[in-house]
Amino acid sequence: MTQKNNENIYKALKEEERTLSEKNFVWMKKAFKRKENYAALGNMGGKLVFCEGEYPSYLEGFRMIIFKDGKQIAVYNWKTEDGIDDFQGLFSMKTDKSGKIFFCLILRGDVPLIIGHTEDIEQETHYELLVHAWDTETGYIWVGDNQDGGLTRIDYLISGNTTGKQNCIENLIAQSYVQKTSKEEEKHE
Image (cartoon, rainbow, N blue to C red; front, side):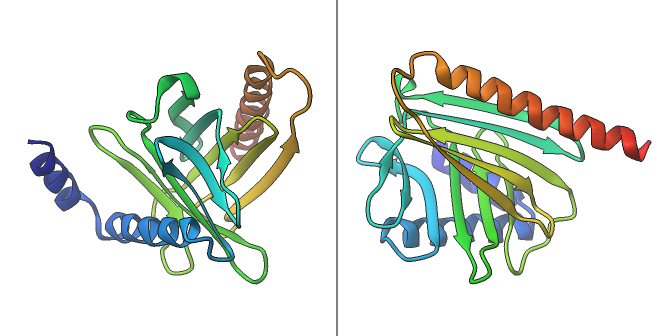
C-alpha cells in the first residue's frame, strides 16, 4: 500500500518537483561519499547526520520553517529523542565555485513539499526558508530562498551545558527571520 501511495504521489508531482527530487538524491549520494562542495542532512546508521567533508556531524536537533510568498506554511521540529524512523526532511546542498549555495529540500508528508534552487531549475512560487541544525559542539543555520540569492549559511560554536539553550536560539532565529519578512511585506504595501 505504501509503495503504491508513493508512486501516486510521485506521478502527481510537477516536472520541476520531480527534477528537484532526483537532484536531491544525487547531491545526497555525493555528500555521503564525501565529494567536495556537497553537503546533506540525512539518515546514516540510524542517526541524523550533517555530512560535509571527511567527518559527519551527528545531529542533536533540527528545525525548519518554510514561507511561501511571505506567509509561513510549514514548521518542522526534530530532536534526537524523537528517533530517526519518522524524520521527515531531506536536505542537500551544493556550493559552486563562487561560494553560492544551491539547495534541494523535501519535507515528506501526505503531500510532500519540494523546493529548491539549483543552477537549472527556477520555481514559479517564491519560497523562503530557515533551517537550523545542531550537534553537541556546533550549530548550523541556513537562510534563503529559491530565487537568485540561494542560501546564506551561519555556523556557531556551542560551549558549556546546552540544556535548554537551543530552544532560546531557535526562538531568537525564528523571531528575527519572521520579523524581517513581515517588515519587508509592509514596505511593499
